[in-house]
Image (tube, rainbow, N blue to C red; front, side, top):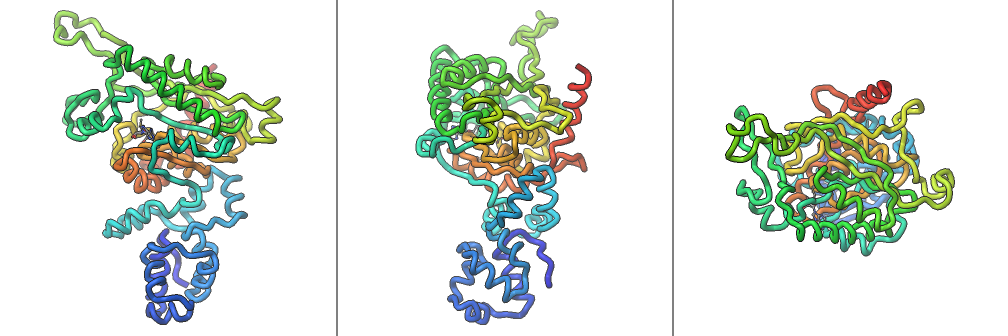
Length: 427
Ligand SMILES: C[S@@+](CC[C@H](N)C(=O)[O-])C[C@H]1O[C@@H](n2cnc3c(N)ncnc32)[C@H](O)[C@@H]1O
């Protein structure tokens, strides 16, 4: 039997059919379907039923479970194993299906590449191209177990006008830093330009958002929300006023290029002065919808209420050493606010105390939360309103999921958990 090297159902079927020297007509008549339907299956334009997968696997002498997974059917026993072993899950999947990246390098067909981008971990995530406020309104109440998100802040920075300026390298609310030592640097949104009216708008935006989120989160469900030291107090206040309890703050220790500058146009005169401190950390607000009864009762009923420990001996800690998102990740997902997998996998993993449930990222961007969820074996839903970022996410998520850098164990998120351990032991 030919070993299954690619992740795509249609391609595996087509390659195996050719290997067995079966024509389209021959195989379609054996399957009792039309040639056109079989051709659509092979090109990924039609989704096979579970019965069709079994028939195809039998006729093509392929493993029906593997073929089923490629078609998006995850057997319940496999699902259970993946949930029970979230850290090992990506490796197990990779070993079973081969590296997703190998396939991308082999294929030059753009449509195939786009389609393949959504296939491998299909059973674990759902992507929605929509305004998250509308989506939240329609979503069933008590149906999401955690939210991990990095929302827009200036609110201005993701308006059509500001996005056009960013895409044309034209400034606006986006500060395009000059090249440093010949390297292009990432644009940063300028939060200092927000006036009182912008701040009131921001509060209304998050108040509205938090109320909608409150309804869809189950009791005991946590929100991890990325923010920044200039605006976090505004956001935290309205999230609390929507009914959530503040449960702390995660400090992502990261050296950024914000702050630390001398007074504009007076650098020489005030060479020993910085207008603001150079920012070396990023706050992530941590909130919880109140539990029903005690934490243990809530854990039993809703599978939420606490945070997943790193190990039996090691609780999840609120300071995480990190680094700016690596260029290799940015090349996979060109989004100005892309968060690094090594950090995201740690907070995503912590967000489901029993590893059960679905995580939502309502401001998905290029999908770093969704990729992190796949990497630790959690189900997730990502929502993005911008069509270009949505397209980027479709392609980027499978590649970010399997991302590891220079042999560092980024895929399980443990490279930086070791540094959490250091912090924990030192205290
Ligand atoms: C800060 S970025 C998130 C980037 C993400 N953390 C990543 O790693 O790619 C916020 C995203 O929210 C999207 N967005 C803004 N308003 C939205 C809305 N109402 N519904 C859904 N997405 C929205 C923006 O287009 C932007 O891509």
